[in-house]
Length: 155
Length: 155
DNA sequence: TATATTTGCATCGCACACGACATAATCGTG
DNA sequence: CACGATTATGTCGTGTGCGATGCAAATATA
Image 1 (spheres, protein in one colour):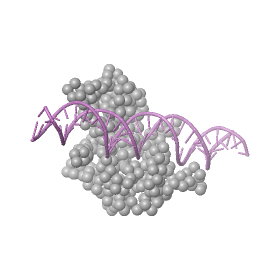
Image 2 (cartoon, each protein chain N blue to C red; image 1 turned 90 degrees about the vertical axis):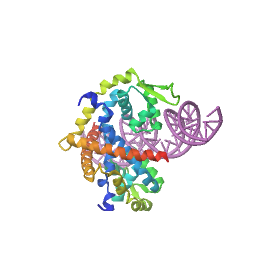
Image 3 (tube, rainbow over the protein chains, first blue to last red; image 1 turned 120 degrees about the horizontal axis):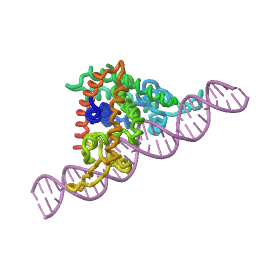
Image 4 (cartoon, rainbow over the protein chains, first blue to last red; image 1 turned 180 degrees about the horizontal axis):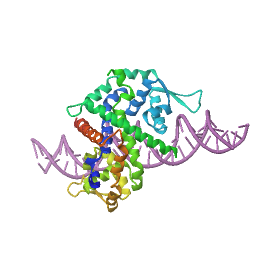
């Protein structure tokens, strides 16, 4: 494919990724509004539902988000009483984030969301096998790209 | 798959989409910084390189972005002398966005970027055929999801 | 042990995204 | 032609993302 053609919007691979990511966040909105949270806040809850207490740093590693994004986000969630923030005894630098009862209670209410979203994304053109393959490619790209941006910080 | 498992981060399909989208934008950064633009601004240039003059509305349709996002973005680009904004004679509501010489000249400098990015994303695990299949799935999702969010505006 | 380096978290500034809403121009229908 | 509905653009407020930078606690090293 010539360089001319590669600069056309319809031949871009990154543009559909960017668009779908935004559109899916929008598709989540009506579900998450009922829970009073945003999509990034939902991601924080996802990791805390797996492990009730985590440091800001560890949440960032799991979600590939920096602390300068997470800190204000987590504070907003604290204000909404979804979680608590406490300094670690062992290491005064570390802030431990823990679910509150309210934060934990949202897990049940969110239980049906992944399946609802998946149903929205499946049709005669897109089979479950396509989604599984797509996830495999995306996971591989996360490995490549997050490795790259880590080495940026090393310099 | 049980509801419990679907709430695990590793089983989410939307999370890798969200992460890869951000990581790719970050991967574009060093290339686009040389041109003095951001990724969304690059997208605006992509559509203007195909058609030298477009209304804000049409740019929004192509990029799936609302005018309340595009208006300030385009004004920043005007300030950087990449494009001009003029009211249409035919319809005073319409703002016509046109490339300047400077904006047009970036096309050559950007010509190699898509191939560079693609090379970054291809490896022994991800073949070109995987990327083509992925794009097909994403395009289908754009159809589904942008249709949905349009009908939201109708009500 | 003193000091240089690293680490964890945070603030600041800037640029998106987007819902809600405002405004002016245009259109559709009677 | 009148006037209500629609359309194109824009402002405002809120919430991310992220690079640059600050700061204090912990660690490594001379």
